[in-house]
Image 1: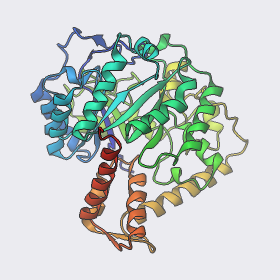
Image 2: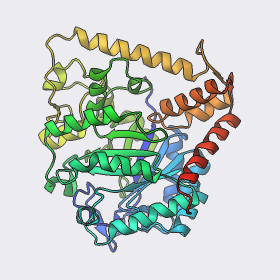
Image 3: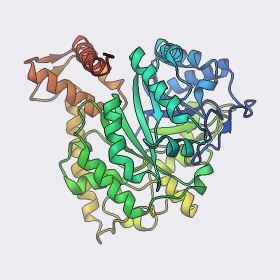
Length: 431
């Protein structure tokens, strides 16, 4: 089975404009050492190597704070030219109208902005810099003015867990295209952060499932939480959230991370190094890493091995590694107790895989019912990251069916996107 890179998270710098208490990278504040950063020429060479695996992957430029690199716009432009869908992870506090416009002009498709509390004092404390909330909100307004999509990112902790419903509402009111709730993995400075309990984790996942679909135009997603798929199945075995999603932790399978020094790891929260792109070709690391090979054919230990949901969920491999030193160990955040007997594992996996096959067939224009997709539209759809593709597809199909359209084309996709963006613009137009 071939494994492509659907998402690559690239820490292009260790310098940061914030001092977040949970930072997995242990980033340096403003004046940190940048001697290990890649030059623009080295960045472009690395992008060429990434393109050998999948030039249509989603490339996340993050840090630290990527906007502290003056050449970040050149990096984004080159990756865009190669075909990558480029997005950025930012604290948001350095964004103004000029930077927002340059990001859009360089091909960046969206920016993930961090908001951890609606109480500015709490947010500023979590992010380690006074006034961070106000500056980040100003950055969001700049993104709106230039028409650049943004996501609200929130890291859940004991201090903000009761705010999550309000934060989701807030993200929707602001016009975010997605609300991403990140669940802490205790690495880097995050080892010192007071974590939520496994029971709170489970209840939060159930809440996220219950509100899914409540916000048209905004996705609500759980990050670093493969258990969400198990929760979705328990709530509804036919849940549309299971359509188009591959089971298990994505670390090392369709996702990886590159550090500022060039180290390749399965994800940002797994420090285990599997190669360095300064001395090895990225494609060779991706294809030949024994660590990645093990993650792609996992042999779980402990409770995860006995769980009937292991092919659908599999637990967080980074959390297992951080807690036990075993990347194949059980994820102690999971409160589910497996049922005895493994026959159900095969049944669940077969059922979900069958649904995935049906979904993939429909995406290729092979569905017997509903509108068909032109070849160009199919290619456009494939450029959307796998995690967002099913939702984008359903939106296009719904629009076509409501308007009596039999064939979905790139022109129709552009029209729907333009109308969607216009509706957001009207919501935020100044009186």
